Amino acid sequence: MAQPFHLAIPVKSLEKCRSFYRDVLQCEEGRSTKDWVDFNFFGHQLVIHQKEDFNPQRISNLVDGHDVPVPHFGVVLTWIDWQSLSKKLKSLNFEFVIAPCIRFEGKVGEQATMFFKDPEGNALEFKAFKDESQLFAK
Image (cartoon, rainbow, N blue to C red):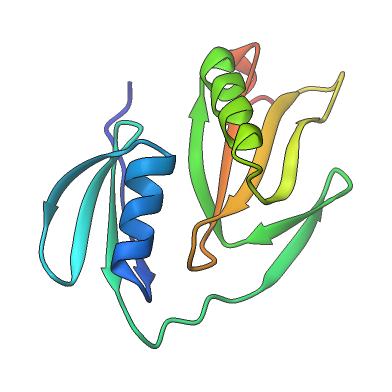
């Protein structure tokens, strides 16, 4: 695996987002203070910082017929892990921005994808490739 990335994002409610990343996405909690929390985000370091005046932008870009929220972040999971997370979120009647689907079907870069937001409106994308060599394919 490549070196893990580090991403720090703002949130209004540290506790609401702490619960989301820890309990819904099952990210292990690391260090924290009253103003921020570290998480093991699928092998990467995600830090949520409380910022009471945070107001996420609501912009998007059309990709393969879907209105994709920008900015967004997430991870590429294995196919099996993506299916498992998708089923879990569906069973929780989770609200998706873009419901789990196959993008670029039958084309180079075919992938499973889903988009949703954390409690503060930060957009996340989780994707998977049956053929992981397609990740950067043109």
